[in-house]
Length: 189
Image (cartoon, rainbow, N blue to C red; front, side, top):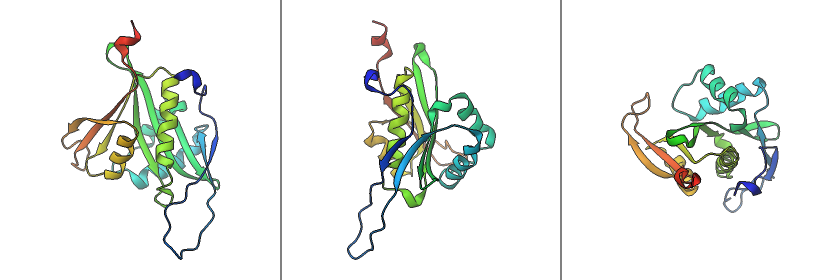
């Protein structure tokens, strides 16, 4: 499967998909969405802005730097008209039995740009990169009340693996979601 994938994430332009519009509304032309890899610390304030607007957990600049500086290929942004409108921040580590586990730490899409498949495209592109890097499974946590996030991930093949009581600082419960990419036992046979 990895043979047909690109060696690393590069800038990709995809026409923005128009959300369903009711009759009589003026049709505003949508610009293309560009998916661009992390390149420098200059992008960090925009990533932080997007995450702060959408995520319930407060993260310090050091948390962002931990992920972005250690796994820069696993940070991807969506841009429209030179404005960052979405971002995903991830990591890839060794897990049990020498398997490689990807982790989606943060995903956010500006509320004005939702329903255009930006979030699912960011996740798909990152999973492609994780596969290239030998990933066997991908995990993340999502609030049990965040039906949009749960739907997005479940539509991409993630399953609810574990219920995490009072996982977030706010006291909200979470699901750990998991996507199996391969069986590490079979990889050694």
